[in-house]
Picture 1 (cartoon, rainbow, N blue to C red):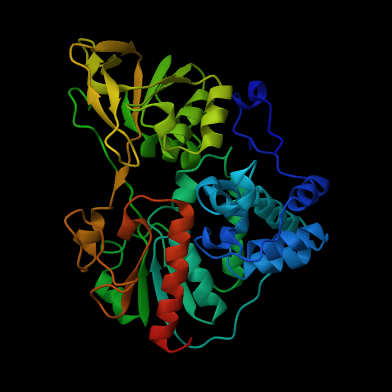
Picture 2: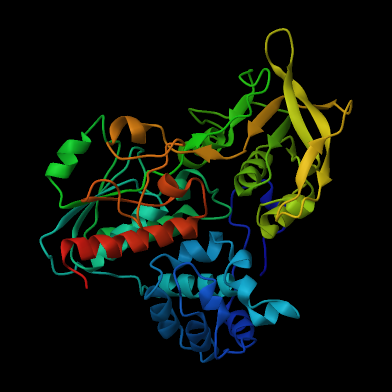
Length: 447
């Protein structure tokens, strides 16, 4: 896929991937073998009938392709951009075993954007079935659940603690990967289906959980896993140390990259981002666009880096440095508590036969990587407000315990990161879709 030139994109937040045009989409679709036993469908968490929609593209039947995708996935414009297809559907593609797999995600994105441009996303209210469902959290799981239930005529209200819908899609994923106009189109589609959004509302504080149960026939809890993890190393609370969540939220929701921002980002010369996942790449690439040097600090090698290959490639292209096989020991600070850098230890890989190689510290190998800003991007935990505000059975990590998507309360369901811990957008959507179906069965509106 064509991309915005790296010399241009490091100075703005415009989308990096430019998408296929019609000829490119048809040419890529024409590579598909249309297998009798399509393994790619097995690799898709929401079971899109991939060969069918690709065949429609081959035949230049874009409206048909859009309809086939929509049968399984209500948010193809989002999934086509942010799903790790290379680890899911594309990883199962037969073509990939002796060459390049079909670019299924890029084709899905093309169809979604075509449908948007040709206004195929206009949706109307379903006939009401009289059932009311409350959804706590407007992230990918909550949105997917709302789509299923609204389609079947439920009166759905989504309660969101922040001032915008989308959850991690809105506050966590940068504009250059997921333009917010695409997200807003999907949210507007839900509104046309009759879904009601209530913002700035924290369940348990603004509205009690018991009150929500009284006024609804069922509840879906999709609060995500938004509590940032820290390493617990010395001086981690120094001036200039941030979580990736805070940085990305400030940039995405509060426009902190703008010159006159009311919540500006800390002024820095060299930023060190600890972690190797997609969030680390998003934080590093976002900060890079605000000037200065940016370096990734990761305790394993490039082969073990969990981030999407595309994101890593784009980070390299944008001039971000990578420090492999080093692990932070402490944050170096000056006399006033300002960051001076990270003291790290060199690590070595140990092959113990697992999927990911273990690492161990090399004795007497520590040194300092200089920098005046540190971002911790090492994962997240369950939102602690779940235990405090919502009376459901949780495990020792604060994750909601479910059977399928059913919780300890017969009328309450849960899914996404609130159940699994931090995972991918598409897995959260899969959970939301399953919850919508289970709630439908519970309410007696689906067989």
